[in-house]
Image (tube, rainbow, N blue to C red; front, side):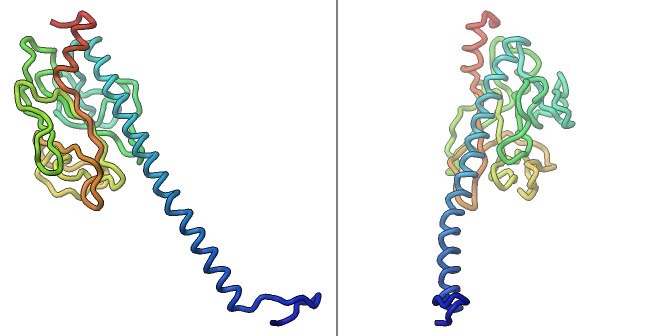
Length: 219
């Protein structure tokens, strides 16, 4: 080894390279869990937002005896009634909730047409909204007892995976929208690497009616 100016042994280039390699490995091992923690926190934030929105939808229904229309022009207010479109962004200004998911993209909202004008009696769904898992097993039943509302985030990639684009177009848009005409099929599943990362909740007809009955707002 070379001697330093004070006569003490110094580090060779090989030793310095080994030290830098070890430091790089240590930093890498720290950064990977940190990245995973950030993604997990964003997912938890999104799930909390969806739960808050579900509560807000119930409160809106109690106050107005109907569910709100989607926001289709980005101003946070419902476009209707009657609804200009059955799917769009959540009407966050009307509901008093956050517009964004954990990745700072707008949350999407779909409503049964029969429940956006007034709570019907009999309370039959007509839009045929359906929620499936990744294996195409039904998580909900058909009309007249289908879900009355669906809210979802497109997750980390911002692309509506599977059927959560609610149209017939290819899933390529990272702003959680597609230009095609909405269908009625949506997916809810645990994350699947490189395949599915959306986060979805649905409001069942019976949950809504239970809250309305308790509040004396239906029938």
